[in-house]
Length: 604
Image 1: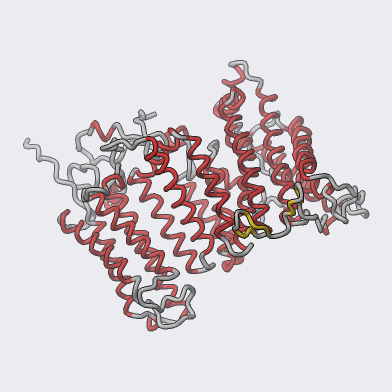
Image 2 (image 1 turned 90 degrees about the vertical axis):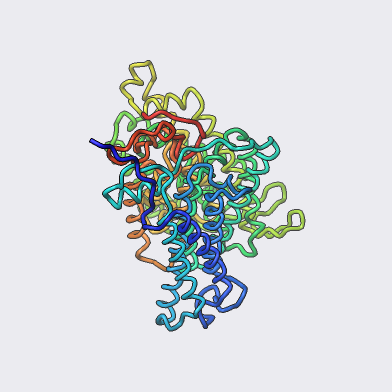
């Protein structure tokens, strides 16, 4: 029988490879040019898309996506000076960037038609933007995949999967000098700060949704290009520089804001992220499912409220901040030990039910300590209001200040304070995870029976994880009480439309990636920022949030920033191969798809 040679790789659409590349690049350039034209005739649509030569609002989103698609297409074509943009995949990143640009543009045109009452409100520039974005996407669909597919694949789904699968990470043609690597990390951090600042400053509603659509597809595009893998490898090589640049960029955020509106959101994100990191010790490292964790945040907040000089405090004490901080952390630690000692002998669902009960008992107890149904300690449903602003060494956090000539609003003061608290919690988490105790927690999480057989005291170490997580939550609760200036029982529920609550905290850990350092930070930022920016959806927030979690658990159960153990557990690292196609040694030795280390890994 005669064996036919393997067919040349072909894209999803029947176009020659050269024509597909030219169509994609030309379409991306034309799409970028259309953002200089008015898309609508009226100023009523958010962003004011009526000017010539001055992109604004959703036009800037489309412009960014089109330029990214153009750069990736030029790099994939081998243009000198741009090859470093695609060290792994060539087709997959271009396809995702083109899809993101088309999605953002199509959404913008649809939003204009819906909000203003029909397609008649679109200017010719809007129609041209939609047409050129569609041409770009069609050209990207015709690009040949990065992997040889052998005989034509029978299924469109398999062909699409092959098109979105990156190639192996190639070594750099010319390694960067040490100063160049540090500069690359600084540039990447500055770019991330710029993108985050633009997103948080974006108007609520349609402009923010368009921004989300582009980011949701641009980040996977950079991931499949291998660029994030390179940056992650640099961050591992220069860990101190990476952490320093990240915290410096975070500290610069309040100086980019004119008002307190988004600085307050940033401060709350840091509080939420700090609490999520504490929960990550319990859930991610030790494997204990805690559904009442927000109660420890409440213990810290109430303890700080009682000793911080509030006129409504039953104790009438006014501790300095450092003493109030230690009081909140110590109170939460004590409650963690008292609750954990009798309950941590339970496992799995039974432990989850008990912790859920503790969370509700705490909230109900705070309601009943009102002087009528119990001692007058917490003022019941009214809570403890009028918590005074912090003052440390004469620096009043409730007043605006100037640092190095730059204005700093009151909530910016609390934001910078939370930067320091978050840095401390990150340090504690890193040290704990890398210690002998941290390795014992992971052993208990993976197989408690085997860990006990190896001589690990399971109960004592689980109780230590519970106490440490509670103390970190109490630390954040102390600052939380001063930021919101009140402590009420309704702030510490199991579930609700706004974080922090136990359900959102657990979702942040799972969404970001259990057991990782950056995962809960990313999950907390997303879960706090998106509901705050999509407040116009009102009652549909929880519905959309639930749908998003279902999709995430279906397609990425290991989280957005997983460790390699979870990635290998949930996914096959080999790209799809057509039936009868020969094995490819280079492909079978694929590097880490998420690029955490940039080194070859074996299939588990």
